[in-house]
Each structure stands twice: as C-alpha cells, then as structure tokens.
Amino acid sequence: MKKGFTDKGLTQQLAAKTERESRQRLLGLIDGEQEEHAAKKNSSVKEHLKNYKRSLLAKENSEKHVKLTIARVQKIINGCEFSTLRDLNAGDVETFLTELREEDGIGFRTYNHYIQAIDAWCNWMVGRRLLDKSPVAGIPRLNAGLDVRHPRRALTTHEFSRLLMSARESGESIQCYTGEERARIYTLSYMTGLRKGELASLTPKSFDFDTGQPTVTIEAKSSKHRKKDILPLHADLVPMLHEWIKDVGRNEPLFPKLGKRKTWLMVKKALERAGIEYENEDGIADFHAAGRHTHITELLRNGATLPEARKLARHSDVRMTMRYTHISLDDQAKALRSLPAPCQDIVRKSAGSSSHELAADDQESPDEEPGGESENPCGSRGYDAKRQPMSPADNETEKWRRRESNPRPATFPCKLLRV
Image (tube, rainbow, N blue to C red; front, side, top):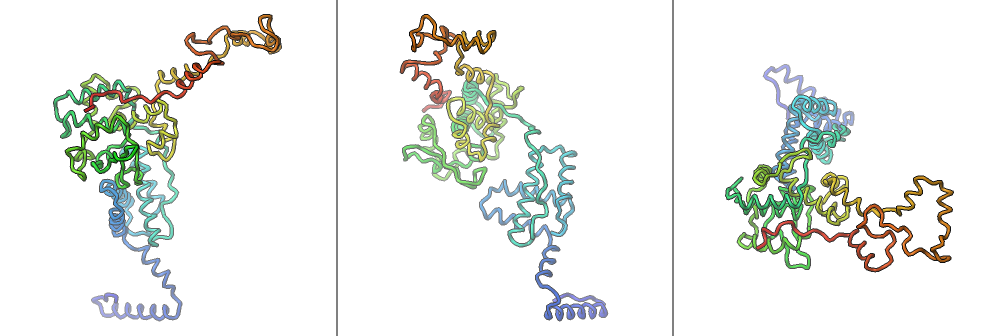
C-alpha cells in the first residue's frame, strides 16, 4: 500500500496511477522482473554495506580485517557520493582513489587494497543477485613493487643472537612484555616464520608433540590467506615450547594481546641497545623483517630449495618468496666459489689461439699412452688452489662435492633460550 498525500486531488491521481499499473501488470504489459531489478538498483548502498559486514563476521573473519574492509568501502562511498546501487561506477572510484593517492600520499599497495575491498563487496552483491555484474570490475591495479615505502632487510644469525641477548638482558618491560617474553616472541617468529597475527593466535593446543614430526597449526581465521596451515617445528624449538606452555591454559594465548602491540618498537629498542642499526641502506629491520624475512632468507642460505621455502612460507607464488629473500654480496661470493673452474691451460690457450690450434693441442702428447689420459691433464686446480679438481676420481672427493652442493641446515644461532 502506498501512502497518499494531504492534497485530495494528488491522492486520487496516485490511486489512479497505481490501479492502471496493476491492470497492466495483470495483462503482462509490465515486466515484474524488470520492476524488481529497477527497485534493487535504487536501493541504498549503506544498507547493503551493513549486510556485507554481517556476512564477513559470520565467516569468522577477524574483527580487524572486517573493520578495515568496511572502512575502506565506506570511504569510497562517501568520497564518490554514492547513495544507491545505480550510482556505483568504476570511473568515479578510480578518480577518487587517484586523488587520494596524490593528495593523501597513500602507497600503491594501499591503493590496491581499496580496489580489492570495494570489488569484493560488489562481487558479494552479484552473488546475491542485487547486481547483474560488478560495476567496478576492471579497475587496473598498480605495481606495488615500484612503490616500496618500507624496504625490509633480514638479520644475519649473529645479529639475531645479539637481538635475543639484548632483549633478555634489558631488565625492562616494553609493550607489556618482559625481556624474556620478548626474546621468546622473537625466537618463535624466526624459527617458524609466522606473522605477528598468527603468533598472537597461538595457544598450547596449537602444538602437537605426539607425532613423529611435531607441528604447529594456524587456524584459517588467523592465517593471512584464510586457510588452515600445519607446519613442522624445528627440533631445537620443541623443548623450549614444552617449557613455555607448561603453565598456560590449553585455550589461553601464549602471548596475550600481541596483535595490538607495537612489535616494531620492541625490536627497534633491542637492536639499538645491541649497537645494530634499525635502518640502513638495505632497509629496516622491524619485527616482520627480523622474524619472517630472516627465517626465509636463512632457509635458502642453508640448503633449502626455492619450492621448499615457498611451501614453508605459505606463499601462493614463488615470486613473493623471492621478495623475502635477501642475498648479500658475501652470499653471492660463496655461491660463486662452488662454480667449477676450467683448466688454466685451456683458458690461456683459448685467449690467444685459434680453434684450429686448440684442436691440434687435443692430439696425444708424448707423456700420454695411446688411448689413455694424463695423470693430471690440467696441472692446476683452477682459480683457487683450495678447490677440488674438475673431474674427481675417488669416492671421498665425490662425497665432498655432495656436501658442498647440499650443506647441512644451520642450527639455531643462539642457545640462550634453551631450558
């Protein structure tokens, strides 16, 4: 029933129009589906945003994620002055975000997060048949790699050991954690590669020590990619965890309220106390860098393959794993030393002889038996006198080569926390 007007004549006109439309609808002259579609187009965006928020919370998304997503969509709605679904369009959204980037200085990554937020909302409405298709689909993302605001660097194992020592010996509480508690947080971050939010979700029941390979489980609601993850635990970490969780309730967090603490500040103060720069030309060494970046870098430094590191880091793309890998000049030099050097005699001849002369040199020398080989064809070990021959002939040398190609994983750099 439609509400009339205070004016009798206008009310009679409205009644006549309503009666005429009802008659046309019965005769099939008005498409009911088209009317319903038009009504949806004119519905309020604010009401649909409220329903979207309820849907996100029902799927066990973290409150932080839901709050940030809704805030970003709301900011776009307000900035573009959208009031109904009919108003939504990609052009206005792109213009608003471009102005936001230029005026407020938001980074490329944040720009992409805004697009992702409103795109997800529109796709949600498409799934509920409020829209035929997403009106903001196709807005190009920016290359976040061209706008790195805070490049990070990994710590060396020696620097990480000094970080732990600095935290334990500080004698002060920072962000409500004692030095010992901070050292435990850093240790767990480094030895598992878990993110801050994932560490904050850990309880004693997250760990399974009863299997042949102890594991830690990250529930989907706490994982960044919203999937349940089960990761192996380092052998040196297991006895520490037994000690850390013995007085903690099974469902109580191991590090209460860690998700709301300024972990970067904790690390910065510890590094400064240890005489290590928090920021240098390679980047900053915040909590994420000191833990997760160092974890992934050390995996690769100590024999893990790139696919193995990607799997442990839980990256969907190996290119993301490479962004967490910080290979220094010393690392490059170490890798270069494993390159077999060619025969010095051949190098010298190839530099000043023709291919015809080289071919002639391949003939049997007086010192060789017909069809045989000289005892030492190169007479040299290459560029480095300490390197192995190019063509090892004994089992011991072959074993040595295998060890060099597959070095043993490094043990935990500091035993300070062993209990």
